[in-house]
Amino acid sequence: MDDITRGEELQEKLKNKKVNGWKTIKEGEEAQISKFADEYIYFLNNCKTEREVIGFSKSVLEKNNFKSINEMSELKTGDRVFYINRDKSMFIAVIGKERLENGINIIGAHVDSPRLDLKPNPLYEDEEFALFKTHYYGGIKKYQWTTIPLALHGVIVKPDGEKVVVNIGEDEKDPVFTITDLLPHLAQEQMEKKLKEGITGEELNVLVGSIPFIDDKISENVKLNILRILNEKYGIREIDFLSSELEVVPAFKARNLGFDSSMVAGYGQDDRVCAYTSLRGILDIYEPEKTAVCILSDKEEIGSMGNTGMESRIFDYFISELLNKLSQNTPNMLEKVYANSKMLSADVDAGLDPTFAYVSERNNAARIGYGIGLNKYTGSRGKSGASDANAEYVAQIRNLFETNGIKYQLSELGKVDTGGGGTIAYILANKGIDVIDCGVPVLCMHSPYEVTSKFDIYMAYKAYNSFFKD
Ligand code: MN
Ligand code: MN
Image (tube, rainbow, N blue to C red; front, side, top):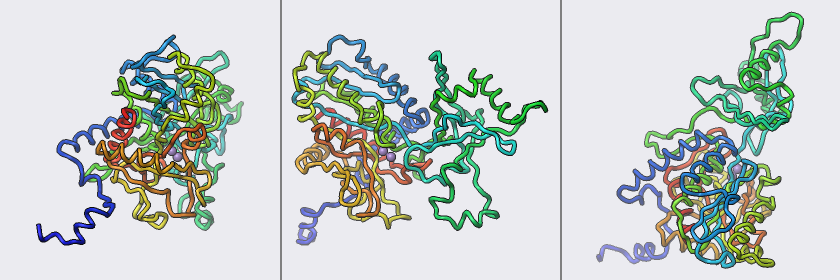
């Protein structure tokens, strides 16, 4: 014992030691981490749009005895319900033993991801190529979306209400699409431009065909041939694009990353990594003390506006319905519920990238493999636009994680004045709820191929599950 120095003793007692999560896992945990990641990869490969996430979640919930709240005239402790909003967002609840006015435990993730949407009049012909015009959705680095295989997902709704579901480019037998870029030999002028101007929004045109329909009496024969194929395959005419939501997403599959398969590479992990882990986290909740609520929201990447975004009053409607069907509603009860509630805003965090470490302040950067990331505040410049979690609430969450052996880290999004960002946290905080950002750190965020650590994914699941049980 006497070979431990006073300094070592003090260090052990006083320093906040940050340790790589892989060094801390217990016997048998590696297999659980790996199995969970396999299931997550399956989810990513089947859910590349918000609608697909909601459809997938609905079937998982129904298998776990959750019912649509619309089918329930009254609710009691232990009831498991969900509400689907226009196929694009969803609220899930497990009714707890305590009255809602004592507060509820909410976890909110978003299920939309940056992508390219087709314009309302997308199809055109140029130099005997058929192409789709796009309008990018969310914050993207445009050059990253050229010369990669792309798939098309979404819906086309006809005036009579018939809905055609499109999903092409995922099956090995499907064709894919791509956005062209200049060959380096002729890119002298382009290469001199600023990176953000190298590829412009109007240059993100998706190549979709090149065989002309043989008839000398018409023009734009390649476009007509594509319309003929679309009509055969989907029963649509060009005008039907007007009432469609078609999303261009990367066609490649999510995969294990690294010789050690310690990471997951795949599209849409912001924020489906948190959506999946919070969905999994509520499945084994049966009779919690506090009512557990999981939010899968839409439109976060473009500001949470609209009736499927978190700014919508539809969440208030859902909580009011819980109150009504529990016979617990009285004047101002909704506000009272919120004032006593707590939330984890489950959204991804920027992980420290060794190649671009200059944007991070190392003491306050989230590290891949160091556990779930908490952000006390987000925002930009002088914390502008931030929902800053109260120290008392941060302490509660620390206590929850430390008690349950969940590895966590507290970080900021990059160096001061380097940039910034936000999540849905402020929207719920504005209702009076205690909120902190809590999610998985990601490399290459918003790119077609984002990177996460399997250790962090598993910690997120455990963190969310323990929060629902709290
Ligand atoms: Mn996000
Ligand atoms: Mn994002």
